[in-house]
Length: 414
Image 1 (tube, rainbow, N blue to C red):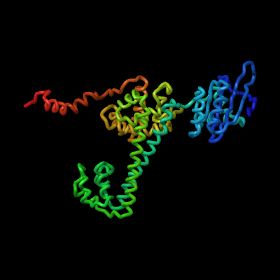
Image 2: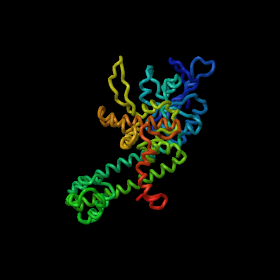
Image 3: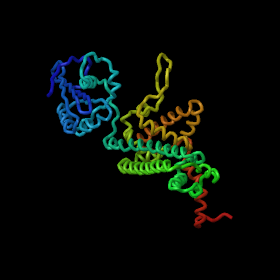
Image 4: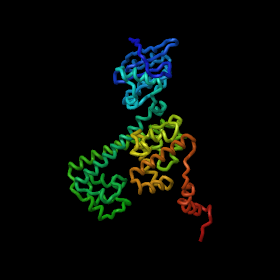
């Protein structure tokens, strides 16, 4: 039942009605503070709900009956997502606030419940909501993040396979740059099926290592136990590849309405179709939610730290930020510095002075600022130092000319 409690508010209010929600796995504690017209003190209503769908629906309807000006909840793990969706269905856009930020707000002198404290802070405008993407993109985050988890599992399984082969005395990784490439995989499969090193050499293809080096690397003591373990690891890798392909296809299919934004992002060096989709899922398409590129970079955790006191900078460590987005931006940065353009030039200038890790974070910072500008202005990326069209013509013109001469569109030069 509702409890009517009178509290003394020592903080200046700016909202008529504020709601705070303390979220647990099986308990939702809701506190509503309402300032009635002509009343000296506000009225406080507190009620508890369960964690099931019918309880969340009842909670949303009860809150909507007050017509609140602001509704806030703490970002406790993933438990906030279902109550947030229930509030969205009744037309309430709640604020999800950082628990660490709430903890640092001073003034909690009395022992009040967390929901009431959230409502008091929200009513006085002392809280700031986190960025929550639209529901269409928010529902795709599990797909994108599960893809990232499976990619890590695949990388770990590849290392386990190489370790098993090394344990058997097979040193393929010592003579082949990519032991998981097409030719190396065919060689490994041949050995696991009982083939000899001489038979496995038939699958070498265009590997740069000589036949003598490959033969010496493939000679080992591959026991039945090694073969059984390696076969299981190969099957697991094939299964992970299938799962990753299915996730990528499903993610691209569901992002069809956002195709223009995806195409804009893919004009940035280092951003392919998959990374563009993951970027869009994490930050959305409306850059007005962040306000500026600097705020977006601070939220992602790729901007320099600012710890200055009395004119002295004590540390420039980057903030924690969004760990999924930060990892993705670093991967894009590694790809961008391997292409001709301003990202490569900046990386080469920074890596000498600041080191590789700091240089990559700086490139990730620059990439994210570029993403912000592209999505805000709806224009494709244009490098200030490289003309990519001219570069493509320079690389492909000889082949084009030969084909035109071959089919008679241009006269052959004697």
